[in-house]
Structures are given as C-alpha cells and as structure tokens.
Image (cartoon, rainbow over all chains, first blue to last red; front, top):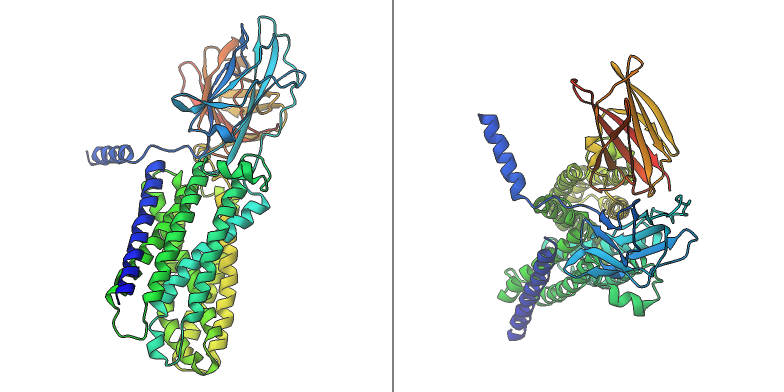
Length: 30
Length: 567
C-alpha cells in the first residue's frame, strides 16, 4: 500500500518536472 | 463611431499580441555595404540578421575574383548582439569580393545568400563570380523518415496510453478473463521507439545544419543543443522520459478489476496525462507554430491538433492490438464493450483535429491559391486527402460496424479489424505528409499583398511593357540574377511622350519564404526614365516586384511583375 502511494507521488513529481522543462522552453522562445 | 471603436479595439489587440515573428533569418545589414566600393580594406565582414543566429552553424566565405578564400577565421557572434556575425578577413588589396553565407533559422530551416563588395579606389570592373547554390532544403529523405518515426511513435505512445488507461480499462470487469497486458506492451514499445528516435532525429538534423556526417558524433553531439530547434527536441526527450516514468507508475498501480480507483491511482493517472500533455507542447514549440504570430493562438492550436491526432491514431492501433490479443471466445464481447466508447472519443478528437487543422491553415496560408500553387499547400492537400479517406472508413465503422457489434453479429469483429487497419494505413500516411509540411517553408505572407499580376517574367533579363491607361510602363531588369547587383529601370510614357517628374518606388517581396519587404525609391536619370541599381534579389526563387508609380498631379498606380531570379 505504502509502496503504491510512494510510486504515485513519484509520478506526480515527474509530471511537475516535465512541466518545469516545458515552461523553461516556453520562456526561452516567447 | 462604432467602427472607430472597433478599429481601436483591433489595434489594441494587435499591440497586445506578441510582435510578428519572421519565420526565417533574413539578412538585414552588411558591413561593408553590399555592391558598394570601400576605400580601405575592411578588417572583418559583419552580417546582421533579423533573428539571433548560432555562429557554430554559420558558414561565411569571402573569396576574391580568382576564387581564393580571404577569411582569416571562423564566423563569431558580435559581443552583445546575437543577431550579428563577424568574420575576420586577411589583409586584402583592391578588387571585387564575393561574400557567401549560410545560417540556420530558429525553426531549423537553412537559409543561404550572397553579395559582392569592392575595395577601391580603383577596383576595376566587377568580375563574373561563380555563386554557390543558394537554395537548400530541409526535406532530405533521412530527415523526413526520422521526423515521421518521431511523430508516429510519440503520438502512438500517448494515444495507446489514453486507450489503455481510460477507454479500454472497464473491459476487464465487463468481460471476464480479458487482459490489457498486450496494450501495456504495445505502449511500452511505442515509448521506447520514441525515446530512441528523438535523439537520433536531433543528431541527424544537427549533422545537416553543420554539413557534417551523422557518424561524426564527436563534432555533432556537442552542437545538438546549439540550435533552438535542437534544444526543444532534446527537451522533448527529457519530458518523454518523465512521461514514460509517470505512465509506467500509473499502469503499475492500476487495478482495473476493482470498481473504484485507489488514491494512488487517482494521483498517478492525472500525473501521467499531464506529463503527456507537456510532451505535446514541445514539438509545437520547435516547429512552425513556435514561429507563427500570434503564438498565443498558434501554440494551443498545434498542441490540440497533436493531442487529437494521438488519441485517434493510438486508439486505432490499440483496437487492433486488443483484437489480436483477446481470444476468439471473448473477442466479440470485448469489442462490443470497447468500440462504442472509443467511437465517441474518436469522433470528438476527429472534430477537434479538423477544426484545429482548418484554424492552422487559415494562419499559415496567406491566400487560397497558395494551397495549390506552393509546395507547402500541395503537401497540405495530400494530408487532407489521406485524412478524408480515413474519415470515410471511420464513418463506415460508426454507421455499420458499431451497431453490428452491439447486435453481436459474428462477422462484425473481422470487418472492424479490416476497416481499422485501413484507417491506420491512411492516418500513418497522413502523418508522413505532416512531416513533409513541417520540413517545408510555409508560403510567404507577401503572397497576400501581391494582386493583379501584370506579367510573369524571368529567369534571365526582363523587358516588359505594361499598359496602364493612359500610361505605358516599360520595365527592365538586368541581368535578373540573385545575389548580384541588378539594374531596375522604369520608362514612363503617355501618348508616346515621356512623363517627367513622376515618383517611382519599388517593393521587393520574396514569395518562397518569409523574408520581409525591401523597398527602393528610383531616381529619374533621363526624362521619363527612372532607375536604380540594387542587390535587391538576395535569393534564388520567386519575387514579386511592385512598381508604385505616381505621375505628377495624378493618382498613383502599381505595376506588379512576378519574377523568377536564377542563381
């Protein structure tokens, strides 16, 4: 149960990191 | 009053939107000035462009009349001005020199050009320089295939994930013994292909920009992040890896056999979908949408277009995978459960796809005629034709196969598979056309400004008489070649007599790609003869020459020639 929750939080962190990369790319271009 | 308010609103909106971007790097200024004679040998050649250019991808060659290279180093960026390239020169004597340049635009398109200058005071007559080819394309076979594989695997992976995690998931509870394992594997394969293909594509493109071999990795790899295009696609690789991780977690914690999703599932699934959406923004940013104005509109349109395409394509592939993986016994039941749900989603995404596609076409094509007159428009027609074929098959599926599946007709699953496979072939081909579109320069917005073409002229010297009652305009262009000084002259007569004191302004518009307009005022050399020598045709290709003539005390009129300048 805890492992699944930890993994899910990891997925959330991955999504946040992905959006940080995209925001940085947007800032560079716009 | 109302109209004035509307105009003011329009102007305010135009100001609020980002400034219009030039789609391609255009040479704005040169030092020494093109086609001029300077008194002392310059220590360097400075080229200033309309957008920042990366010196590592730039080529600047300066040769004398015998073809000897006279640069003394590589081009470098000018401190504090990323738009300017500085190339040091050797100590050179009197005579004529040819400058040839090549830079990479922000969207990855190479642009070339050439001009001459002379060192005086007595440089002598200008020699016949051999100008290297001024046309270069980003549509090599290798790049096209690589781009296609990247698009295909990226869209396929995202669509397969959506099908697996949202659309097909309830089938596990509806049909006992049905497993989604095959869909998981198909998704994993697509993600791995995308993760491999993306960096390979960036390296292939970088090798093309730097005119090196792909296998020259020691030189190519360090330059991969130097272009805006390369940076965006390497960011895509990173985001794709993060999406792969989030999606793997979402599928790992997913328990489709339970009625309600657990907290872990409810956290992981939106996270995976959000990172998938992030991955769709980057190709839009790296391509034409990132260069088109207003970007506040073109980027969301392009991202929505990609999202709709991925749901459709990945869903279709997923349906075939499901068909093959579910045993004969449960096949009809499984399809009867999944297909109606997918149909609804696919119908919505096709509507979105067509709507955003039309919106993008309105933004990209300056005139309706550019749809069949330019190669960009022709590739778009191919894409539309292929998608229309796919839509036809989809309509048959919706109208015929779906009700038959619901009625548990025994022949329905096979019919579904055949139609879906046909759809996949057409959508995959349309995606290739989309890859070609992304590699071509969109038609220049100058096409919309060109109206009423009096004649098509060139290649070669031009001598054209155009009647504009009550005037006759005789236009001459010699030698009508790109990248060298051309002499433009306009003779204006009325009833056989020269018209003195007219004002003649000529605008030059490149029609093959976005370059910005140049305009020159002509001097009256003899009564009724107006002329100007200028290196105005900076590239090989189609030019609109618009001669705006204002006779004294009369209304101005415009004579437009469509010219083809050769190299």
